[in-house]
Amino acid sequence: TVTLNMNTSNYFSLTANGNITIANPSNTTAGQAGALFVTANGSFTTSFGSHWRFATGTAPTMSTSAGKVDRIDYVVQSANTIHAVATIDLLGTA
Image (tube, rainbow, N blue to C red):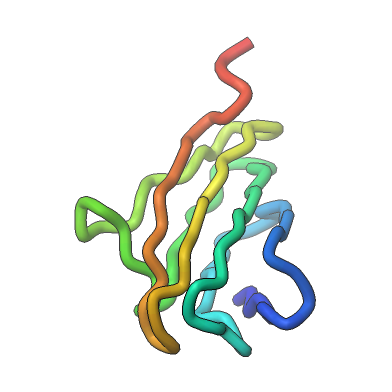
């Protein structure tokens, strides 16, 4: 489980070296915006805490091929609502 501390940055990067849960972040502030870059390192799953809200109502299926990079752009609406949009395989298939 990864818990982002929004006091430390608006931009985060992590590598999925196993199945991960991106938990509800700490220290969110309404209006805060940023991005999270997730680099896949194998066939691992990524899930999200309940505060993360995606346009489809369902969290995206993140890349599982090693080296693929996905980006989650977000805007904090309130302490328990984070609007998020996913760009999967940001760098494209080589």
